[in-house]
Image (cartoon, rainbow, N blue to C red; front, top):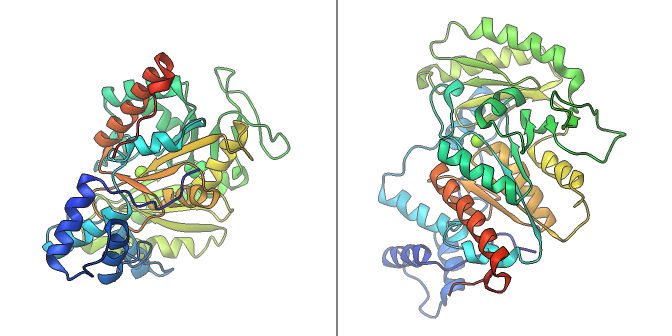
Length: 378
Ligand SMILES: [Mg+2]
């Protein structure tokens, strides 16, 4: 079992502590772990309130929340100090790699991976969010050694066309379209796919006609806004702002709001330069994670170590589930500070690939020589 929000002293963290010490006056008796808390408190940053959470049901709230989820590059020294403080609470998963392994000892590692911004870079055209051949090779090796699921807001067909690996589980449309094993035949709608392998769980099936209807309306209403893109993810819709001039964000969001006013059974969430529309059912990436764990036989088990890696606000639902269960680790992909319930961070998809590759290599070595598999760094 992993304590969430563990503070780990790594060289990077020490460097940040030194930076902070050089800029603020700290109690001289503070020792390393306590000093981190002191630094956070001294600077007025609790790790959960580090960045003010911006939420709201009005257009300005949506825009603010999208900006918060899509921060620009850190430039000022003040922001650099913020980043240092953030790193203290959310160290790099690469720096604490051995500790993560140690915490997983004797447990089955199960991977849950977001797609956009995690396995592939964020690109202007969402239809061109390809992952590298290297990432695909690593992902294939990961799936060979650990149960692995892609958890994404994309529709299943689209993400499968990007990933192209039949051996993975897919929880698409924010978990509302799951291809994978299930034990709960009473609540799950099951059928085989074209390969006669998959079982589907689609808790929002009854919303399909409504989603299609709103998709067509949004296409029409948003076509006057240059750069606006509406993506049909089958059980949810995405209105992409990536190619829209920021001056047009508010008018575009207002158009979305007016459409949604007519559909109280749909709700809206914000992501990285995207507004997402989905059914009001209580189902999200966190629920999908729990469903897949149950399907794998780990519903009430302490013998599992889920590792969830994602970059988006919608991934926070899964981080919260891990935190509540006290199992595994959540890893946020971000190079800039964001409010998160994840324990650790990775900067970008290339670091994700590096982390996954190291796990595969560790698995290979541990199968050759189990006694040397766990080594904890100082
Ligand atoms: Mg993402």
